Length: 362
Image (cartoon, rainbow, N blue to C red):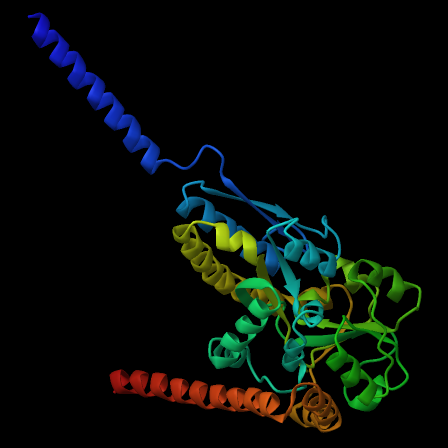
């Protein structure tokens, strides 16, 4: 009896130990890996594309790592300006940040290519371009600069003008105006080719700068025209769609390298999911923008094809000449060729879809 009792006790003990080990294997570590992300813009995912994308990223990572990675988000420039957040990410003070394309040109100057005027006709074309060889090349450039890129997506989509003195319908309408731009040499050349001054002013100083007449308006993504109450200080909005705008989620290389490989895969997957959310939210906010501006009493204008062509003739060559001087003819030609390829692919896709519909409607 005694031996039987000992055997039963031993069996129970072995079972408990095995069960405990099983729990340890399938449960996240007691101390999760912390991933701090510095963000511009508000925290509300319904009001900003980056906030929406970051929410998706955080949810995906934390659920799929079972809490093994804890994502902490610091929105609204809590951790400093975008260049400061990028520098903190590179040094490892934080693990990641999102950065607009203009500020990104300070670290990967080739990103100025997206500011070639009147190159992208629709959001679909930009998505096709950056899902191809050019997207891969941009990723390599980020890696070379010391970061791991997890997504590149729309930051409010195409760009527009908000002004106080007059509506912008043609290049001459910009002459003599002071139009705020972000940190981009290509955008500066664009503005100067139209005869406008292009001061660089931080976004949190923009409202006051327009209100007090330091500048006569701004050049910004469509979805941002009414952000931060800018629709209170501008009188006119011109939806020129003259260039594109993007945002990147970049990560400290050393931190990423030290994350377990299965978690690395989850981070990459989360980046792809967040990219799609950012695109969708960006276009949603841009689509809402015109009605919001009109409700605020802002006069909204969309230039005609002929007016856009007049802008292109004045602005595209000075910008591409600068880019060719900086990066060589090949990179500029390759980039523009990828855009033409994307246009052709999009046209084929539309025709194939239409043919399929007509086939089944007969």
